[in-house]
Each structure stands twice: as C-alpha cells, then as structure tokens.
Length: 142
Figure 1 (cartoon, one colour):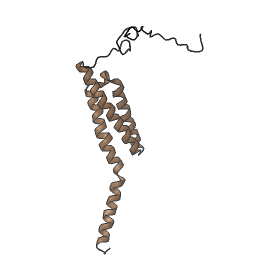
Figure 2 (tube, helix red, strand yellow):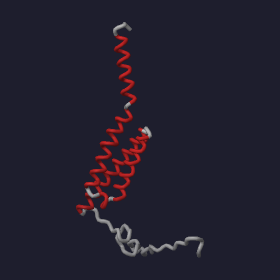
Figure 3 (spheres, helix red, strand yellow):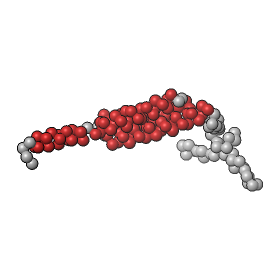
Figure 4 (tube, one colour):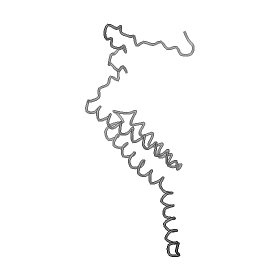
C-alpha cells in the first residue's frame, strides 16, 4: 500500500466499524419504533381494544417488552418481540374490522362453538347429544 492510500484505508475502516456497531439501534428504529408502533396504533384506531382485546393487548405487551429489551441492548430479542407485536397488531386490526362490519359472528354468552345455550354438542346421524356438564372437585372433597 502506498502512503497516500493508508489514510483513506484507515478512514474507511473506522467508518465501517462505526456503521456496523450501530446496526442494532438502527434496526430497532426501523423494526420496532416505526413498524410495530404503527401497527399497534392502526389496531387501536380500528377499535381492536374492544373488538379484539386478546390480540390488541398482546401486541401492546410485546411492544413494551421490545422497548425494555432495547434499553438493555438486547437487539435481537427486541426485534423478535417487535415482530410478534406487529403480527398480533395486524391480526387485531383484521379481527376488529370483521367484527365491526358484522362479518364475524360469535356466541360469547355460552362459549360454545355451535351456539347452543346448554353447552351440548349437536347430534348428527342418530347420535345422542353429549351432556356438557363436568364435575370438579377442589381441595380433596368428594
């Protein structure tokens, strides 16, 4: 190497080292701070807090954990939590939109999939209906 290229080489090496050392925070800014936060805000605007609470609050919790991990320089784990927050927020948005437009109908009163009020399964082809009652003993009682 000639004397004139040594300072350039050293300068480029230092710049590359600084750039690579800062990849974690820059990746965080893109993935978590921008994309995941925007997805959670979109879900909130779509009414996901009321119409898709599991997905919405899961997304909020994952986003908060991603921010905490970033504070400890746990970049990879922060990205993972941010990605999961984004996924849950997108699911919450879709679910909230479906519920608001009436395209998703569920029977929440009894928790059964077929909508029967007594919790029994629908019988088909001459089968008997199954009773949905289960006895539970707590504390060793009979």
